[in-house]
Image (cartoon, rainbow, N blue to C red):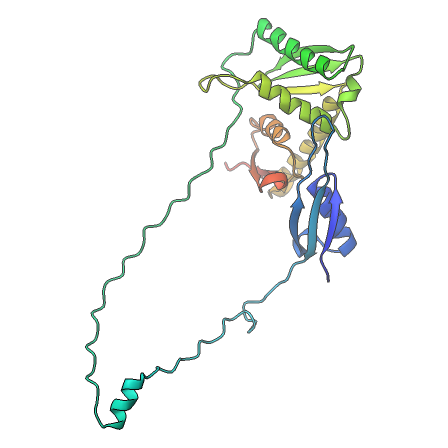
Length: 282
C-alpha cells in the first residue's frame, strides 16, 4: 500500500481524510506532518495542513529479517614480514597480553526539562479601571482593522480565572473568519499586547468572543465533557478527548479541577496534544 498525501484545515482533518481513503484505523497508520496549518493574520496568508500517511509496517521480534546479521569473523591479516619470517623458520616472539583497564561508565546525562510558560491569574481580579483599559485597547485594535460599530464589554470569570471580552454589534461577525481562525489570531495578538509586563507580574489570560461564537463553542464542549465524565465514572477507564488548542485545554482543566470523581491531564505533542480524563484515586 502506497503512502498518500492529504490536505486539511487542521492536521487532524488531513489525517482523517487520508485514513478514509486508505481504509485504515489510526493505530494502523504512520503519519508524517509535511506542513502545519497556518491561520495567517486575520485570515491572510493561511495555509492548509499537509500530511503523508501510510500503512504501519509491523515487524515481529522473531522475524529473522529483524535480527542483525551474524558478524563473520575476520581473518587475521599477516604482514609481509611475518610471511618472510615464517618461510625462514623464524618465529616472532609472542606479544605480552595487555593489561585490561577498568572501563568507567560515562555519567548519565540529564535531559534538560523544557520550560513552560503558564498564564497565571492575578491574586485579585482586575479592578474596573484595568477592565476599562483592556476594553479600550481592544477597541483601538478593531479600529486599526477597520472593524466599525462594535461594543467591547470586559468581565472577570471566577471559574476560569480569566478576563472575557465580548465584542458585539456592528461588524463583529467579520472577526470570525473561517471556523473562528481570525478570532483566534486576534486573541493571540491581543494577549501579547496586553501582557507586556515585568516578569514578576502575573499574566492575565484574556479570551475574546465575537457575536457569541465562543459561547456556543464552549457550550458544545461542556456537553461533551459531561458525557465523557459520565463514561469515566461508569467504566472506570480513561477517556481521551479530541486534540485541542492550549486555550481550550486550559478551559477544560479549570472546569473539572474541583470534580470529586475525576482528574484531568494532557498527553501528546504539538497539534496532537489532547486532554485525558481519568477516575480519581481514592
